[in-house]
Length: 302
Image (tube, rainbow, N blue to C red):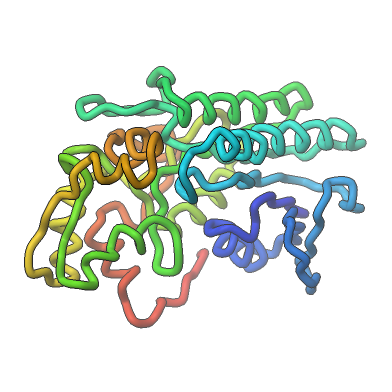
């Protein structure tokens, strides 16, 4: 297939694009960066630069929610980079003689809002707050492609872990100095997923014609932040562990602290596992062993 990937140079895209190529697909990446084309992989800055028919789209574009403090200007950038880009994508798809048959579009488990008690699956109602409403708008923009006859699957991503980026490196920063830590009470849930399982699940949903609607891309075994600290301490010995008061996080990052850091959600990948997907890293300890290994094992898609 010829697959268009938006956000293909980001944290997930850096692992996904080579996997798509390994699977024999031709890939076009929409990126603001000026990058050189190579065999089977090309880069464009605008949709109208794409010259050959596209069979499938994987839409991962979007400014990170955790990159900086949530000013009004940055909130507008997050909306534009997700909702605006998806609107333009679907408009471009509608102009094609044969619209892409599949759209896998990014979203996040922030769609559900926060709770310390509930377990959310794909049938749970939407939450409230900036992050939840942003995800809901993002998904609605992608679902507009249904009118084109395109199969649409929504990727509600959890916190993605791997060795060379994402949230994990920040979460382990204090461990390098022998101190385990968590934010606030530590009882807030952390629904995480290994980046390799993100790649594998995207390929799985791409290839399975039954895959439609929302899918929680999270490992089956969510943990609280204190449990994360305990498990990580077993991999990186610490002298002691401590909680960082919530007011410190609020002083540093403002509104983002309450929506992303001091609250969380226990999310289950019910739709994904019901469809038959099997996680390579269902538990956090095994994921951290893999991530912290000195040598990356060679990945096989077989």
